[in-house]
Length: 165
Image (cartoon, rainbow, N blue to C red; front, top):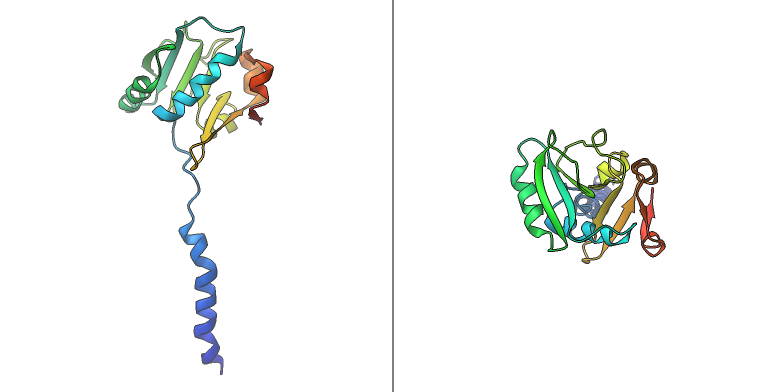
């Protein structure tokens, strides 16, 4: 009798486990071109509003220069961007986009908005991250402590669009 229930039990377990094995969460990958394009739109809400074109520095981890160039080419005409490695000069940038595992939290000057992926924002090394949804929508996330430390503030209209951490 026990043998008769065993195949049914295995089938039930397989049925319960299959959705777990098939489901994959959205990737929390490094910042790419489309994500950076959405993130840069947040610069329109910085107070006081920066002049156009807004200077942006893209900082890449070792071996990530091609990814930095891809991000640069995806940005619109409202920004002027340069790509540097993690030891590069960040002066003059209104925003810094972190690509890969680069850490600029100790190098960013007051007033510079550091944009990175969700892990960077959650760790407090970046003030802003964009989470793209499978539907094509995007959510802005800010680390309030990192934002306060940077001395960056956003317009009230933008604050309603973000999820604070």
